[in-house]
Amino acid sequence: MKSLVSRLAQVLPVRKKADEPVIVPDISRVLPVSPASATSVEPADPAPLETNSAQSTDFSVDELSARAEDAVSSYSDRFDEWLENDLRTLTEAWTRASRGDATENIWREVATAAHDLHGAAGSYGYPSISRLCGSLCRLLDAAGDAADPALIELHVNACKAAHAANAKSLDDDAATSQVCEALESSVRQHEVAVAG
Image (cartoon, rainbow, N blue to C red; front, top):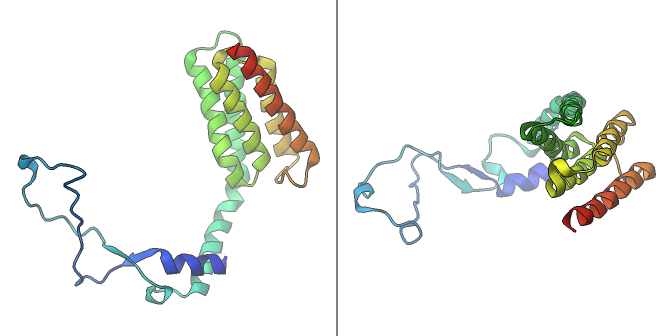
């Protein structure tokens, strides 16, 4: 973490001193300005930025590293709770959609829940769930409500099983990786069948 913060401190923008002029580029060739809106208006101080070194910050690299680690640690305790909520949302949406009389809005809930998990599960420390939901998103994008219900059910159940097994690494869990590969293969086959 310390080396990451050190590198970031060298390239991230820091606030300029108040007495330094603000450089405003002329973008009129890119975005034409109409005569009516060309009146001069003084902008509020936009907290000007410049690239500077770590020496110009109020914190040392060690202090920034410690603060970053504390922030990550404070959130990581909640990752499992957030993942469980997202899984519950997906499961409940799929339960409603699988009843047979699902509306377009219910199918949208399933797709949204799968998409949210696809994006967040990796950050929560569950790359297998992210991969499974990516496959589910692909299935739903290709087939929508014509998707094979058994294949959707397998994806949802695989996500719940990966969470229950605490499958936080695809590299360490060959079975989880094989399930992901099998479902991805099934989705590709289903895409061909639906497109044909």
